[in-house]
Length: 461
Image (cartoon, rainbow, N blue to C red):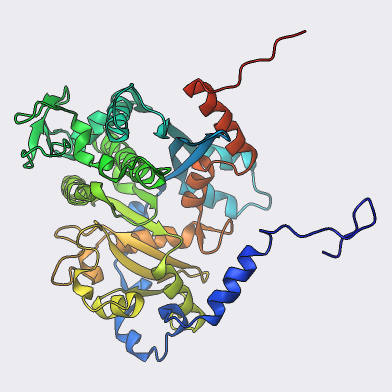
């Protein structure tokens, strides 16, 4: 390295310092087909492009005036160098409320009033933590059962407390399995005991139940099946991310239900709910997809003007492809691309595009180029029916009457905090994200104390 040290010699490069450069160089020499790099002739897209001003837009009296953004963050840290198998997980979900009118009022001012902007944003945070690997709730139990007990305890004790909302995660889980205002009485659970023949869904109340076949204790949170991805040897980052995803959904359910109960005709129908990431549920909890779709469609049918809800993706194959389309000027400012089966084929290189998303998504993807040139990938909930199914779903904008109002908010809340950003998503992410570096060190120290692994203090001599 061309840097001189104190002793006059050149500084030696770290053995791992060039690893990224080497890997990138090897990848550049490899031959792969990347759809975003081979867009080719794009004239076939013109029939699938609509203009944002062609969509029905709400009048000034019904324009969306507020945004609730939800985002989560998760990190799993090693506890101590001498115990590399012991991992501790932290996760938190943030919700912010943005007053669009207050923010817009500052655009016309010569100098921005930071106090006015601060009052335009309110936030709340839900955080949780527990050992993910190498440490157990009780002696003699498996890591899967340790996770099951931790999740059950978490859902019973952790509450969403915002204004007049004061409900536990468990209450919100039962609510999601019911309808707005009428939570389910039981949840369907499959017995997790290996070798048990009771594989059909067993109704479990909030207090739990015993398996009628093997007698194993069942908890209502077992319906999430997150424990199925937990392994003995590994950090278990994936199931921790699944759990955070569920908590994000429940936070959205709780906040939307609060507005539905208190002000559905004045506030709820003027508020956009935005989640960071697509409206989808992945992995073992994916059955919540159908529950979320049915719940919010029921809420929308009983709300004057309906409920506006969308997800925004910052990364992924669709985002890469959308960026490539903008780079090739295939999308002009104000263009909305309908992502039908042919577009899905071009993006995913799949042979069965009609089945795309039918098991995971509860919102339909759209690609929109905002009036200021930003490229945004949205997922939007249809007013009825499913966004995806085995027959291609509902790709057209007619099934999404809230789409025009959502695009209006996208145009009004552009952010320069990251590429193609939205202010509500950026604010929620800033609230939920864990700081890199010293933040990780603090979490590691906290985990040591919680697990009783902190080094003993040295005695004075």
